[in-house]
Length: 386
Image 1 (spheres, rainbow, N blue to C red):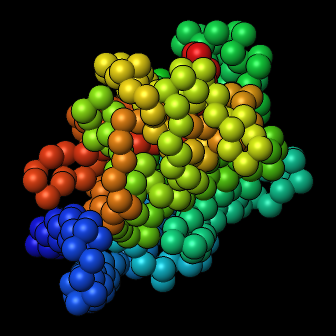
Image 2 (cartoon, rainbow, N blue to C red):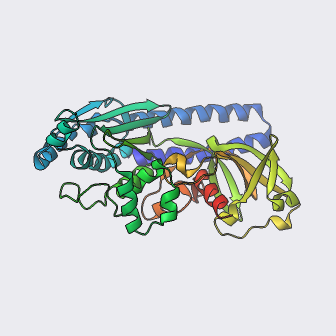
Image 3 (cartoon, helix red, strand yellow):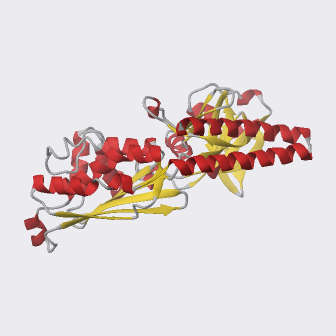
């Protein structure tokens, strides 16, 4: 029922964007005032629905102490679980999807992270390992950190196993330690010294990462050899309405998150073909949105062209790859753009979760599916292969 209500509210936001556009052309103060009040009502309805969907993280963490006890008994290890911040609430759908990944991470902490009592004491540690789950808010996000004071990740061993799976030695020698740790999320790769029944055959972290990303979150890994490992999950607190700019490229409609958009500029077609535009005294590379997705573009037939100046960051900052390009600006070449809209964007679920370059989908008022783009991913890929 809540999902249906959210979908309906998403449709209302799409219709609201139409009335906002209409109010500009009608130039009626009374009509504009009515549209403004309607927008406030829809926003309030959206907030109330989201509030009703919220559940405390405690509903998820209540079963974790038993998981730790069971695996400790099976492995002959000693581990204590400490949980803080579990009174914080998350959207019901996000919480339900988070269950399996969280259990898998906790199992790995005990099975592969925490050492045996003898090894810990020889290393000057307490015989009992500590696993901590901490949740806290960060702006409109919830961050859940799962850490242990165990052996940490052996990066060299991870690279060796990545090489055996076909990752090139050139790539492995060039990547940062941060990116190397993320290699444990490759399908079939395990950071463990040996495979156990408890944590399976090392095929779990790739699934964990996919699930987290499919619900709109990110996963980061930090580790110090001999000191322990911390896995950080940054999650959207709600299935919220996202402010986005609607753009058109070769007849296809896309959404760009407003948080990434700096400016929309009209430039000559000649400047567009030159591949560089000046913005705030900086030369910004122009990237064709149509070309990125392999669809026909028609800039050559126009006297003027439209570019959207967007902010992007390298994949390495998200711990996903070793890309040395700096954080910066890029100009996305589009055919047209619309107003800023409030879109109810849903995470991509299988099979379309494999769709490259998109992080979510919404349905317009006339029933068309429109994808929200991962600006950083598409620009990083375009600049790398330029």
